[in-house]
Length: 223
Ligand code: HEM
Image 1 (spheres, rainbow, N blue to C red):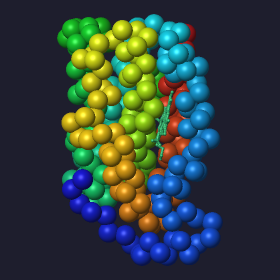
Image 2: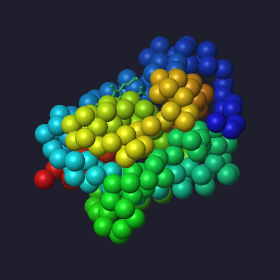
Image 3: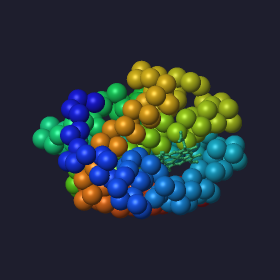
């Protein structure tokens, strides 16, 4: 996390607004609770985590994640070069595309047989590539805080139900940074540095859209 966010006004200003939680991290979580529930209760991911699908289904999911993370990681790196807010969130240690490529290669070798992107994956990746900085940060938040939360359960359950070995599950391993809880706490502090109402609004709207895109991707993977 290179550059500290400079709040545009004192954070006590926010607590003076009765209906707006002062902390953006809290506001975001509250305002998107329903969208999160809808995404996490999609049939595909529920059944995958419940051990009702197959190992192949996990790899189908991971193959679709690759273009999404490639788009996200290229976009945040490019944005960080010229935008202080993007730079303050950019942390190359969070990046997952290389880990996904590693896991797929560890499982299947270096061959070209990875599934082609589905239309929803293309749409998701395009949305990220075309995002403004606040929109891009919404996708950054969604993917990495999600991976550090429910993603940890996905990794553990896939290992248990489908006997995928740990060395093929580096996608979910953030131990090179810190324990997931501490990484998330630090990330939420970063979020709390966002005080500009226009940035908050754009970020929040895109977070809702991002949950929808993630849910649609799960739906597309249903057989
Ligand atoms: C089966 C699927 C999922 C499960 C079981 C799950 C579970 C969870 C849990 C338990 C938390 C709370 C963790 C904590 O506060 O420490 C959480 C947070 C979160 N999840 Fe998920 N999740 C799932 C899917 C998703 C998806 C598809 C996304 C978005 C792409 C996502 C994004 C997030 C985010 C951004 C947070 C942090 C919310 C916040 O505190 O600001 N999750 N998830």
